[in-house]
Length: 242
Length: 225
Image 1 (tube, chains in turn purple, yellow):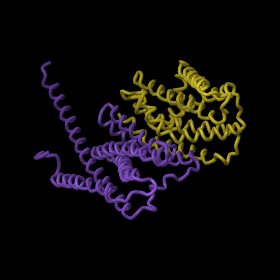
Image 2 (cartoon, rainbow over the protein chains, first blue to last red; image 1 turned 30 degrees about the horizontal axis):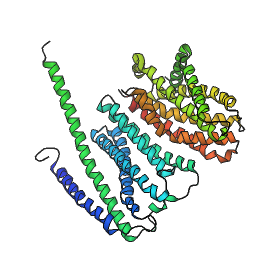
Image 3 (cartoon, helix red, strand yellow; image 1 turned 120 degrees about the vertical axis):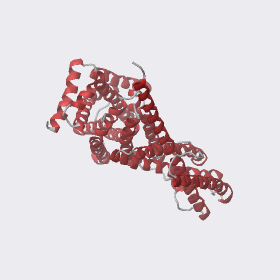
Image 4 (cartoon, rainbow over the protein chains, first blue to last red; image 1 turned 60 degrees about the horizontal axis):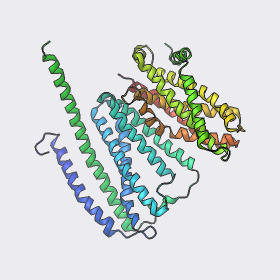
């Protein structure tokens, strides 16, 4: 995008710096995960998927929370910028939770012997994913961008209110269940594992931020295109001979 | 105009339309009964005890017919652009929302009032629990479902995808209601003591309060145009 006046100068610089940092950190992460970190005793090599699975969930949650906050801010201020951030973070939330839902079963199959169980985190993650997929479909189905933004704002807030209740209800519904997921807790991790995990979370959050900035810029350009198209259409109506 | 009078008027209007045409309640009832028939074929209830599966069967029937009731109710607003009239009327928009919720709850309750006795006959079981608790549980969960459903339907029925979109948004959001309803009904069918499922009843009540309040606050944004 050389020479394109797509925003203030320092934003462009920050964006490039962030891209560069992510581009450097991802290979470092991969090297750490596959070469440096010791193999987990009981689960073996498949446990390394943990370094993708859990950081993706972190990034996904970041998206969901950001979406809720920006939805509320949009309805309050009616500033289009908040709506663009809410939209972008919901999209990224869905993307990262898709990674979570894909890597989860791959990890679960060799370790638990099943692809899927009705465990509380799995079930509520799936419900969350469905809800935000619905959010994106609702946005697409609205008649105009202003309506899409308003409705998405309402849904973003309702969704955020609903998530803790969904989690609680699924937990009660399951009743007492074996704590099979203790492995993903912080305890009992080799110090090298802890450090690698921290590095991966940091990288995923940076990656999320870099994508968020780009998605918001695309959304802003889309808004501008829509505005220009609208103006051109109006002018041609006015100038056309009767 | 008094706020609650407006709520009452909106609900009464929906009921009047329904009493004149009598198309919705009959269709919904037959649909709910058909769901029971489908389950009657899918599971062999001579082998499976109805207590273990029955609550799920009943609530699938209620939730499916409930979705139809909600989307139909807003489709009617769309026809002849009645919604424009509501927007011009000197009433609070949240009063319109509460009136729609009340009417939907009444429609769903009418279906439930017939489906529950029919299922008693069809599946040969008896409610050993107290009737008052059954009614309380049905009302609490129906209100929660209608509260969120009405908020969403006000958006989805005005889109191109229309009725397809409502269940897509409503089912994930209504997961707590569905779980609470099924669990409470199971306990009631088995005639267990109230303490066993009191927390589920509390969850339904909390869900109702949270989403009725949130929807009343947010409904203005839904109907702005």
